[in-house]
Length: 207
Image (tube, rainbow, N blue to C red; front, side, top):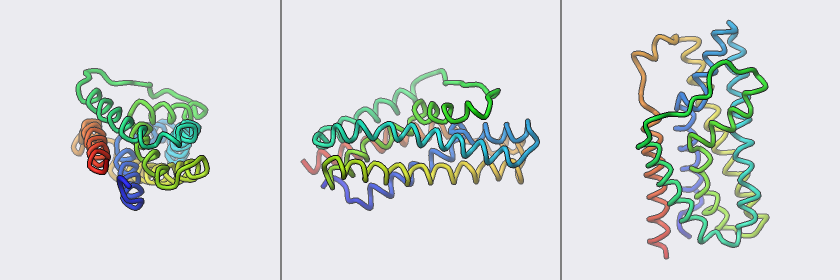
C-alpha cells in the first residue's frame, strides 16, 4: 500500500479546504452576485450552484477510474507526475483564465465545473482516486472509492467557500480584500506540485 486509507482521505479533505479558500474557486463571484442582487440568499445560492458544477465535473472522473481500475499501479504515479506538471505550469504562466462576472444562475453550474478543471481541483484528486481504488480494486471498489473521495473533497470545498463568502459579504465587506488579500492562486499551485511530488515519491519508495 502506497499510502494508508486515512492519509488519503485526510489529504483529499485538506485539498478541498484549500481549494475552497481560493477566491478563484467561486466564493468571490458569489459575493459579487450577492452585492449586485442585494441579496444574501444569492450568495449562498451561487455557492451551491458552483459547488454542484464542481461535483459534477469530479463525477466525470468515475468512468475513467472504473475503466482503468486494473491499472491503478500505473495511473497513480502517472497522475502524480501530471499534477506536478500542471502545478508548475500554473506557477510559470503569465496570464490567467477569466470567465467574467456577468453570468446567469443557469451558467453557474457549468462555470463551477470549468473552474474545477482549470484551477486544478479535478487533477488534484486523480492520484488519490487511483490510490484509494488500489486498496479495494475492481469496478465496485473504484466506484465506491471515487464517490467517497468526491464527497469528502466537495463537502470541504463548498463549506469553506460558503464561510468565506458569508464572512466577506456579511461582516468584513468587499473593501477588506484590499487589506487581507493573499495570493491563493500561487499557494494552490505550489500545493499541487508538492502533493504530486509526495504521491510520486511514496509510490517509488513502496515499489
